[in-house]
Image 1 (cartoon, helix red, strand yellow):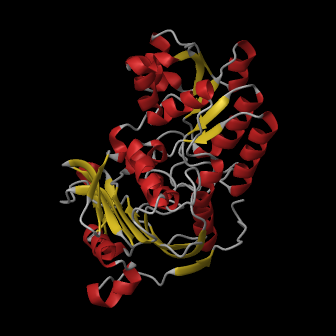
Image 2 (image 1 turned 30 degrees about the horizontal axis):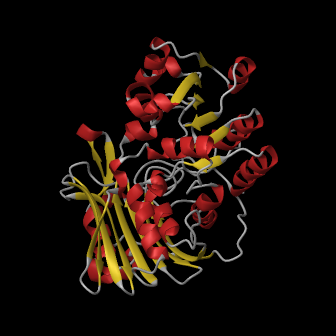
Image 3 (image 1 turned 90 degrees about the vertical axis):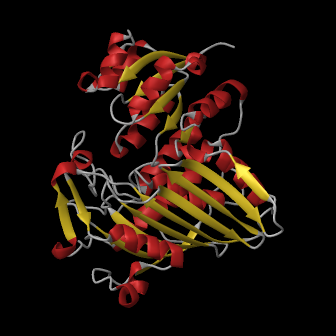
Length: 410
Protein backbone atom coordinates (compact mmCIF):
# COMPACT_ATOMS: atom_id res chain seq x y z
CA UNK A 1 0.00 0.00 0.00
CA UNK A 2 1.30 3.46 -0.89
CA UNK A 3 2.62 5.47 2.04
CA UNK A 4 0.63 8.47 3.27
CA UNK A 5 2.38 11.82 2.88
CA UNK A 6 2.32 13.48 6.28
CA UNK A 7 2.87 16.93 7.75
CA UNK A 8 3.56 17.31 11.49
CA UNK A 9 2.58 20.71 12.89
CA UNK A 10 4.26 21.26 16.25
CA UNK A 11 7.42 19.46 17.38
CA UNK A 12 7.89 20.21 21.09
CA UNK A 13 6.07 19.17 24.25
CA UNK A 14 3.53 16.40 23.66
CA UNK A 15 4.49 16.41 19.98
CA UNK A 16 7.60 14.56 21.14
CA UNK A 17 5.48 11.41 21.43
CA UNK A 18 4.46 11.82 17.79
CA UNK A 19 8.08 12.36 16.74
CA UNK A 20 9.19 9.24 18.60
CA UNK A 21 6.40 7.20 16.98
CA UNK A 22 6.99 8.51 13.46
CA UNK A 23 10.78 8.18 13.51
CA UNK A 24 11.28 4.97 15.47
CA UNK A 25 8.26 2.64 15.30
CA UNK A 26 8.10 0.12 12.43
CA UNK A 27 4.34 0.54 11.99
CA UNK A 28 4.90 4.22 11.21
CA UNK A 29 6.29 3.19 7.82
CA UNK A 30 2.72 3.68 6.63
CA UNK A 31 3.58 7.40 6.69
CA UNK A 32 6.08 9.43 4.71
CA UNK A 33 6.96 12.42 6.85
CA UNK A 34 7.38 15.11 4.20
CA UNK A 35 7.74 18.06 6.55
CA UNK A 36 7.16 19.70 9.90
CA UNK A 37 6.10 23.20 10.91
CA UNK A 38 7.36 24.82 14.10
CA UNK A 39 9.23 28.13 14.41
CA UNK A 40 10.70 26.90 17.72
CA UNK A 41 11.73 23.42 16.55
CA UNK A 42 15.40 23.91 17.42
CA UNK A 43 14.48 24.60 21.07
CA UNK A 44 13.21 21.08 21.82
CA UNK A 45 15.02 17.74 21.72
CA UNK A 46 12.31 16.21 19.52
CA UNK A 47 12.45 19.16 17.14
CA UNK A 48 16.22 18.90 16.86
CA UNK A 49 15.89 15.18 16.21
CA UNK A 50 13.58 15.90 13.28
CA UNK A 51 16.05 18.42 11.88
CA UNK A 52 18.96 16.02 12.29
CA UNK A 53 16.99 13.23 10.61
CA UNK A 54 16.63 15.35 7.49
CA UNK A 55 12.93 16.18 7.73
CA UNK A 56 12.31 19.66 6.22
CA UNK A 57 11.19 21.97 9.02
CA UNK A 58 9.39 25.23 8.26
CA UNK A 59 8.39 28.21 10.38
CA UNK A 60 4.89 28.52 8.90
CA UNK A 61 2.22 26.51 7.15
CA UNK A 62 2.40 28.96 4.27
CA UNK A 63 6.06 28.10 3.71
CA UNK A 64 5.40 24.35 3.80
CA UNK A 65 2.42 24.38 1.44
CA UNK A 66 4.32 26.70 -0.86
CA UNK A 67 6.64 23.78 -1.63
CA UNK A 68 4.78 20.57 -0.68
CA UNK A 69 1.46 18.82 -0.39
CA UNK A 70 0.44 16.36 2.31
CA UNK A 71 -2.46 13.92 2.41
CA UNK A 72 -2.58 14.15 6.18
CA UNK A 73 -1.62 16.74 8.79
CA UNK A 74 -1.19 16.07 12.51
CA UNK A 75 -1.68 19.22 14.64
CA UNK A 76 0.06 19.14 18.03
CA UNK A 77 0.07 22.84 18.87
CA UNK A 78 -1.32 25.27 21.47
CA UNK A 79 -5.11 25.43 21.71
CA UNK A 80 -5.36 28.94 20.25
CA UNK A 81 -3.84 27.71 16.97
CA UNK A 82 -6.06 24.67 16.36
CA UNK A 83 -8.84 26.34 14.40
CA UNK A 84 -6.75 28.48 12.07
CA UNK A 85 -4.23 25.73 11.39
CA UNK A 86 -6.85 23.04 10.81
CA UNK A 87 -8.72 25.27 8.40
CA UNK A 88 -5.53 26.14 6.48
CA UNK A 89 -4.44 22.51 6.18
CA UNK A 90 -7.85 21.36 4.96
CA UNK A 91 -8.05 24.22 2.48
CA UNK A 92 -4.71 23.04 1.07
CA UNK A 93 -5.81 19.45 0.57
CA UNK A 94 -4.88 17.71 3.83
CA UNK A 95 -7.06 15.61 6.09
CA UNK A 96 -6.42 16.64 9.70
CA UNK A 97 -5.97 14.95 13.08
CA UNK A 98 -6.07 17.77 15.62
CA UNK A 99 -4.93 17.16 19.18
CA UNK A 100 -7.42 17.73 21.97
CA UNK A 101 -9.17 19.90 22.95
CA UNK A 102 -11.00 20.75 19.75
CA UNK A 103 -10.49 24.52 20.06
CA UNK A 104 -10.63 27.43 22.48
CA UNK A 105 -14.21 28.46 21.70
CA UNK A 106 -17.45 27.20 20.24
CA UNK A 107 -17.23 29.74 17.43
CA UNK A 108 -13.83 28.37 16.41
CA UNK A 109 -15.23 24.84 16.53
CA UNK A 110 -18.00 25.92 14.19
CA UNK A 111 -15.44 27.49 11.84
CA UNK A 112 -13.45 24.24 11.79
CA UNK A 113 -16.52 22.17 10.94
CA UNK A 114 -17.55 24.63 8.25
CA UNK A 115 -14.08 24.38 6.67
CA UNK A 116 -14.30 20.59 6.77
CA UNK A 117 -17.70 20.62 5.08
CA UNK A 118 -16.59 23.20 2.52
CA UNK A 119 -13.40 21.34 1.55
CA UNK A 120 -14.69 17.77 1.89
CA UNK A 121 -11.67 16.83 4.02
CA UNK A 122 -11.67 14.63 7.11
CA UNK A 123 -11.20 16.20 10.55
CA UNK A 124 -10.62 14.10 13.68
CA UNK A 125 -9.90 15.11 17.28
CA UNK A 126 -7.16 13.30 19.20
CA UNK A 127 -8.97 12.27 22.38
CA UNK A 128 -6.88 9.10 22.41
CA UNK A 129 -9.16 6.99 24.61
CA UNK A 130 -11.91 7.36 22.00
CA UNK A 131 -9.59 5.54 19.58
CA UNK A 132 -8.47 2.85 22.04
CA UNK A 133 -9.55 -0.75 21.56
CA UNK A 134 -10.63 -1.07 25.19
CA UNK A 135 -12.90 1.99 25.25
CA UNK A 136 -14.40 1.20 21.84
CA UNK A 137 -15.12 -2.38 22.94
CA UNK A 138 -16.72 -1.08 26.14
CA UNK A 139 -18.83 1.39 24.18
CA UNK A 140 -20.04 -1.37 21.86
CA UNK A 141 -21.08 -3.38 24.92
CA UNK A 142 -22.90 -0.36 26.35
CA UNK A 143 -24.71 0.25 23.06
CA UNK A 144 -25.63 -3.46 22.93
CA UNK A 145 -27.19 -3.26 26.39
CA UNK A 146 -24.65 -5.42 28.25
CA UNK A 147 -24.78 -3.07 31.26
CA UNK A 148 -28.34 -1.83 30.79
CA UNK A 149 -29.11 1.86 31.21
CA UNK A 150 -26.08 3.72 32.50
CA UNK A 151 -27.04 5.48 35.71
CA UNK A 152 -23.76 7.08 36.77
CA UNK A 153 -20.05 7.36 35.95
CA UNK A 154 -17.53 8.70 38.46
CA UNK A 155 -13.98 9.70 37.50
CA UNK A 156 -11.05 10.76 39.69
CA UNK A 157 -7.79 12.17 38.29
CA UNK A 158 -4.63 13.10 40.20
CA UNK A 159 -2.28 14.86 37.77
CA UNK A 160 0.34 16.83 39.76
CA UNK A 161 1.79 19.75 37.77
CA UNK A 162 4.39 22.28 38.85
CA UNK A 163 5.57 25.74 37.81
CA UNK A 164 7.54 24.29 34.91
CA UNK A 165 4.23 23.08 33.47
CA UNK A 166 2.63 26.49 33.76
CA UNK A 167 5.67 28.36 32.44
CA UNK A 168 6.27 26.14 29.41
CA UNK A 169 6.13 27.27 25.81
CA UNK A 170 4.96 30.78 25.04
CA UNK A 171 3.17 31.20 28.37
CA UNK A 172 -0.39 30.25 27.38
CA UNK A 173 -0.86 27.57 30.07
CA UNK A 174 -3.66 28.29 32.52
CA UNK A 175 -4.84 31.33 30.61
CA UNK A 176 -8.42 32.28 29.79
CA UNK A 177 -7.39 34.12 26.63
CA UNK A 178 -4.29 35.66 25.10
CA UNK A 179 -3.49 39.35 25.11
CA UNK A 180 -4.29 39.29 21.39
CA UNK A 181 -7.83 38.10 22.17
CA UNK A 182 -7.68 34.42 21.18
CA UNK A 183 -9.51 32.09 23.54
CA UNK A 184 -7.48 29.43 25.38
CA UNK A 185 -9.61 28.31 28.37
CA UNK A 186 -6.71 26.12 29.50
CA UNK A 187 -7.48 24.19 32.69
CA UNK A 188 -7.13 20.76 34.24
CA UNK A 189 -10.49 19.85 32.64
CA UNK A 190 -9.74 21.20 29.17
CA UNK A 191 -6.18 19.98 28.65
CA UNK A 192 -4.17 17.48 30.71
CA UNK A 193 -7.22 15.65 32.14
CA UNK A 194 -9.57 16.50 29.27
CA UNK A 195 -9.50 12.89 28.02
CA UNK A 196 -11.29 11.65 31.11
CA UNK A 197 -14.07 14.22 31.17
CA UNK A 198 -14.64 13.65 27.45
CA UNK A 199 -14.57 9.87 28.02
CA UNK A 200 -17.66 9.92 30.23
CA UNK A 201 -19.57 11.91 27.64
CA UNK A 202 -18.25 9.63 24.90
CA UNK A 203 -19.26 6.40 26.62
CA UNK A 204 -22.82 7.64 27.13
CA UNK A 205 -23.28 8.79 23.52
CA UNK A 206 -25.97 7.06 21.45
CA UNK A 207 -23.68 6.12 18.56
CA UNK A 208 -20.02 5.14 18.21
CA UNK A 209 -18.93 8.60 17.07
CA UNK A 210 -21.37 10.48 19.30
CA UNK A 211 -21.08 11.85 22.83
CA UNK A 212 -23.91 12.57 25.22
CA UNK A 213 -25.22 16.12 25.39
CA UNK A 214 -24.80 17.80 28.80
CA UNK A 215 -28.03 19.35 30.06
CA UNK A 216 -27.17 20.54 33.56
CA UNK A 217 -23.95 21.01 35.50
CA UNK A 218 -23.12 21.69 39.14
CA UNK A 219 -19.57 22.93 39.39
CA UNK A 220 -16.88 23.81 41.90
CA UNK A 221 -13.55 25.07 40.54
CA UNK A 222 -10.48 26.29 42.44
CA UNK A 223 -6.84 27.21 41.99
CA UNK A 224 -3.68 26.97 44.05
CA UNK A 225 -1.56 28.44 41.25
CA UNK A 226 -1.44 32.02 40.03
CA UNK A 227 -3.41 31.28 36.85
CA UNK A 228 -6.53 32.68 35.22
CA UNK A 229 -8.40 29.39 34.92
CA UNK A 230 -8.53 26.51 37.43
CA UNK A 231 -6.19 23.70 38.47
CA UNK A 232 -8.83 21.81 40.47
CA UNK A 233 -12.46 20.96 39.77
CA UNK A 234 -15.37 18.91 41.02
CA UNK A 235 -18.24 18.62 38.55
CA UNK A 236 -21.61 16.91 38.43
CA UNK A 237 -23.09 16.76 34.94
CA UNK A 238 -26.47 15.37 33.93
CA UNK A 239 -26.78 14.25 30.32
CA UNK A 240 -29.79 14.40 28.02
CA UNK A 241 -30.51 10.77 28.98
CA UNK A 242 -30.41 11.55 32.71
CA UNK A 243 -27.04 9.89 33.39
CA UNK A 244 -25.06 11.45 36.24
CA UNK A 245 -21.39 12.13 35.49
CA UNK A 246 -19.07 13.06 38.36
CA UNK A 247 -15.59 14.39 37.61
CA UNK A 248 -12.85 15.21 40.12
CA UNK A 249 -9.44 16.37 38.89
CA UNK A 250 -6.52 18.39 40.20
CA UNK A 251 -2.99 19.53 39.43
CA UNK A 252 -2.58 20.75 43.04
CA UNK A 253 -1.93 17.26 44.43
CA UNK A 254 1.59 16.55 45.75
CA UNK A 255 3.86 14.49 43.53
CA UNK A 256 4.43 12.16 46.49
CA UNK A 257 0.69 11.62 47.12
CA UNK A 258 0.54 8.06 48.49
CA UNK A 259 -2.19 6.64 46.25
CA UNK A 260 -1.72 3.68 43.93
CA UNK A 261 -3.97 5.10 41.21
CA UNK A 262 -3.60 8.48 39.55
CA UNK A 263 -6.73 7.93 37.48
CA UNK A 264 -9.80 5.75 37.90
CA UNK A 265 -13.44 5.58 36.97
CA UNK A 266 -16.48 3.54 37.92
CA UNK A 267 -19.40 3.07 35.54
CA UNK A 268 -22.67 2.00 37.14
CA UNK A 269 -25.39 0.47 34.98
CA UNK A 270 -28.64 -1.33 35.68
CA UNK A 271 -27.07 -4.69 34.75
CA UNK A 272 -23.53 -4.28 36.00
CA UNK A 273 -20.50 -2.09 36.58
CA UNK A 274 -17.15 -1.33 34.98
CA UNK A 275 -14.10 -0.27 36.98
CA UNK A 276 -10.96 1.21 35.47
CA UNK A 277 -7.79 1.97 37.43
CA UNK A 278 -4.44 3.26 36.26
CA UNK A 279 -1.33 4.10 38.23
CA UNK A 280 1.79 2.65 39.82
CA UNK A 281 0.65 -0.94 39.42
CA UNK A 282 -0.37 -0.60 35.77
CA UNK A 283 -3.75 -0.18 34.19
CA UNK A 284 -6.83 -2.39 34.13
CA UNK A 285 -10.47 -2.14 33.09
CA UNK A 286 -12.90 -4.85 34.19
CA UNK A 287 -16.65 -5.19 33.74
CA UNK A 288 -18.79 -7.09 36.22
CA UNK A 289 -22.30 -8.10 35.18
CA UNK A 290 -24.94 -8.59 37.86
CA UNK A 291 -25.19 -12.24 36.85
CA UNK A 292 -21.55 -12.80 37.75
CA UNK A 293 -19.77 -12.71 34.39
CA UNK A 294 -16.53 -10.68 34.33
CA UNK A 295 -15.32 -8.94 31.16
CA UNK A 296 -11.67 -7.96 30.91
CA UNK A 297 -11.12 -5.08 28.51
CA UNK A 298 -7.83 -3.97 26.93
CA UNK A 299 -6.26 -1.17 28.98
CA UNK A 300 -7.37 2.17 27.49
CA UNK A 301 -3.88 3.67 27.70
CA UNK A 302 -2.04 0.71 26.20
CA UNK A 303 -1.64 2.43 22.82
CA UNK A 304 -2.02 6.19 22.90
CA UNK A 305 -0.81 6.47 19.31
CA UNK A 306 -3.54 4.23 17.88
CA UNK A 307 -5.33 7.42 16.79
CA UNK A 308 -2.62 7.94 14.13
CA UNK A 309 -3.38 4.60 12.53
CA UNK A 310 -7.15 5.03 12.75
CA UNK A 311 -6.59 8.21 10.81
CA UNK A 312 -4.43 6.33 8.31
CA UNK A 313 -7.19 3.75 7.85
CA UNK A 314 -9.66 6.56 7.21
CA UNK A 315 -7.39 8.05 4.53
CA UNK A 316 -6.49 4.77 2.83
CA UNK A 317 -9.59 2.62 3.37
CA UNK A 318 -12.38 5.07 4.15
CA UNK A 319 -12.76 3.63 7.66
CA UNK A 320 -15.04 5.60 10.01
CA UNK A 321 -13.48 7.84 12.66
CA UNK A 322 -14.75 7.48 16.24
CA UNK A 323 -13.91 11.04 17.35
CA UNK A 324 -14.79 13.90 15.03
CA UNK A 325 -15.61 17.52 15.98
CA UNK A 326 -19.24 16.70 16.76
CA UNK A 327 -18.00 14.00 19.16
CA UNK A 328 -15.75 16.47 20.99
CA UNK A 329 -18.21 19.35 21.03
CA UNK A 330 -20.06 18.37 24.27
CA UNK A 331 -16.74 18.52 26.14
CA UNK A 332 -16.07 21.99 24.76
CA UNK A 333 -19.58 23.08 25.74
CA UNK A 334 -18.78 22.11 29.34
CA UNK A 335 -15.48 23.99 29.30
CA UNK A 336 -17.04 27.10 27.77
CA UNK A 337 -19.90 27.01 30.29
CA UNK A 338 -17.41 26.81 33.16
CA UNK A 339 -15.53 29.81 31.81
CA UNK A 340 -18.76 31.79 31.57
CA UNK A 341 -19.98 30.76 35.01
CA UNK A 342 -16.63 31.50 36.71
CA UNK A 343 -15.27 34.76 35.26
CA UNK A 344 -12.92 34.76 38.27
CA UNK A 345 -11.60 31.47 39.64
CA UNK A 346 -11.88 31.04 43.43
CA UNK A 347 -8.49 30.53 45.08
CA UNK A 348 -7.91 28.07 47.90
CA UNK A 349 -7.43 30.00 51.17
CA UNK A 350 -3.78 30.85 51.77
CA UNK A 351 -3.67 28.72 54.92
CA UNK A 352 -4.41 25.64 52.80
CA UNK A 353 -1.83 26.37 50.11
CA UNK A 354 1.74 25.14 50.45
CA UNK A 355 4.72 25.56 48.14
CA UNK A 356 6.88 22.42 47.79
CA UNK A 357 10.34 23.76 47.00
CA UNK A 358 11.90 20.53 45.75
CA UNK A 359 9.07 20.00 43.25
CA UNK A 360 8.48 23.69 42.44
CA UNK A 361 4.80 23.02 43.03
CA UNK A 362 1.86 24.73 44.74
CA UNK A 363 -0.50 22.29 46.45
CA UNK A 364 -3.64 22.38 48.58
CA UNK A 365 -3.16 20.54 51.86
CA UNK A 366 -5.27 17.38 52.16
CA UNK A 367 -6.85 17.84 48.74
CA UNK A 368 -6.14 14.31 47.54
CA UNK A 369 -7.95 12.73 50.48
CA UNK A 370 -10.89 15.12 50.14
CA UNK A 371 -11.37 14.45 46.44
CA UNK A 372 -11.17 10.71 47.05
CA UNK A 373 -13.89 10.94 49.71
CA UNK A 374 -16.05 12.89 47.27
CA UNK A 375 -15.39 10.32 44.54
CA UNK A 376 -16.27 7.36 46.76
CA UNK A 377 -19.46 8.99 48.09
CA UNK A 378 -20.54 10.61 44.81
CA UNK A 379 -20.62 14.08 46.37
CA UNK A 380 -19.15 17.49 45.66
CA UNK A 381 -16.85 19.09 48.27
CA UNK A 382 -19.57 21.55 49.30
CA UNK A 383 -21.88 18.63 50.10
CA UNK A 384 -19.28 17.21 52.49
CA UNK A 385 -18.32 20.60 53.92
CA UNK A 386 -19.63 19.97 57.44
CA UNK A 387 -18.94 16.24 57.59
CA UNK A 388 -15.33 16.52 56.43
CA UNK A 389 -14.62 20.09 57.58
CA UNK A 390 -13.77 21.28 54.09
CA UNK A 391 -13.47 24.93 55.01
CA UNK A 392 -12.45 26.07 51.53
CA UNK A 393 -15.41 24.64 49.64
CA UNK A 394 -17.86 27.05 48.02
CA UNK A 395 -21.45 26.43 46.96
CA UNK A 396 -21.51 24.90 43.47
CA UNK A 397 -22.58 27.00 40.52
CA UNK A 398 -25.67 25.52 38.86
CA UNK A 399 -25.41 25.81 35.09
CA UNK A 400 -28.24 25.12 32.68
CA UNK A 401 -26.64 23.56 29.60
CA UNK A 402 -29.80 22.77 27.63
CA UNK A 403 -30.04 24.79 24.41
CA UNK A 404 -27.34 27.01 25.84
CA UNK A 405 -25.17 29.09 23.54
CA UNK A 406 -21.78 30.20 24.80
CA UNK A 407 -21.77 33.84 25.74
CA UNK A 408 -18.17 34.89 26.30
CA UNK A 409 -16.08 32.15 24.73
CA UNK A 410 -17.79 31.53 21.51
